[in-house]
Image 1 (cartoon, rainbow, N blue to C red):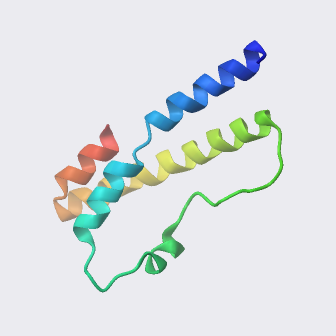
Image 2 (image 1 turned 120 degrees about the vertical axis):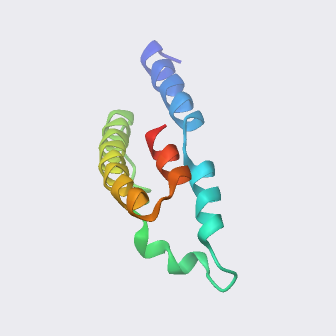
Length: 95
């Protein structure tokens, strides 16, 4: 493994462990009613799947762009949280 590949591997491992997916999913579950399915929420997906064959540099660049977009979306959501007095979700966003 080259040092560059090792650096990318460590970066992606760190990124994966810093994921907010589980805490956000748990908050989402709090809002969910029993008659809802995941299919109702797919149109809300912001980060699209990409199964393209690409270089590691292109993957990292795409990840960086996805993270920037998610940061913008989260920043806008803080206003919604304030309007709905949802301190728990606002806290997740701030962290």
